[in-house]
Image (tube, rainbow, N blue to C red; front, side, top):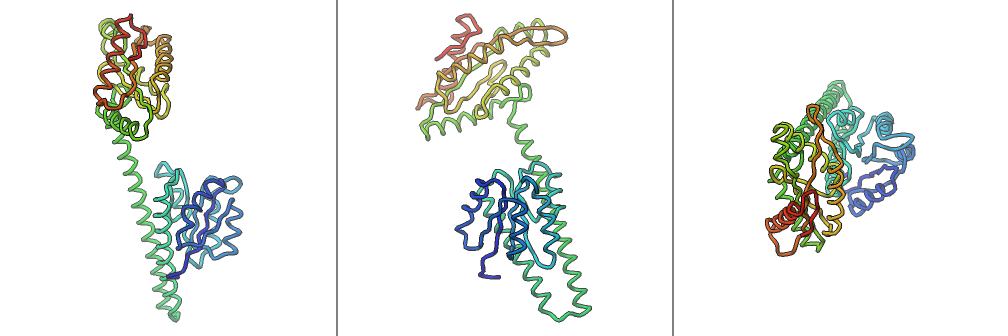
Length: 345
């Protein structure tokens, strides 16, 4: 089929996702595009048209992608067809299930145009190679020796595919392991928040974004009041537990696009992208009240803590350090005014 466009079927019950993939691929002259909004419709089209590549979403009502994939393999035995499943795959066990059902590849959600291009092109290359091998085998006069060679070729292709699938599983597991290691390397062990190094890297990113997009950016410095008394009266292990609880509380209280890190000791810095100082002030006051009401328990002992918070909006021209210092100074002013307060710089 050199020079000819391949028939490609996109299957997704979500009209927006279906149209998105169609729009991404429609200008590629390598494909004749077909669309199906359900598994049943996909099977009908495959029965009527000479489909060579199928992009198939897994999670669909009535008939999911797993079942559609299984039925396609039952329908099409004597000719090649490439099935690329679309999935929010998260583990190697998920991948095993996809490959065991006869999938040739997968595209991870959310769909990125570059990955869609690359995976689809790879499917086209595999299809052409399979078709070429089949045509070469069919063009020769059949004989017991040639039948044996064809059987050997099929077995070899099956073995190669199994090796390829095994290597891909290992690569996926390695990728997941590396992501976990990167995550661990970026976090403070005690609080579970960003460590100081990663926090300053994020500060740099958010400052650049604020300047480029002309968006407000605000940071707050949080300090646990009388933290030395906690260590002196209950021990450092209790102090560590308070740091952990603060980390958990911050992590659960912030919006998904905010960033919190342990600045040092009992101090924490929070980055609020696209947020004015007044909005950050309201968020900080709410957090201060939540901590004031919370009771910490350690070794049967109950204790309460409070925090002092300084709020400072980033000013264009400020260095990261100057911005952080302004928030720090506002926090110290809150302490001087009696602690358990929020101060706006």
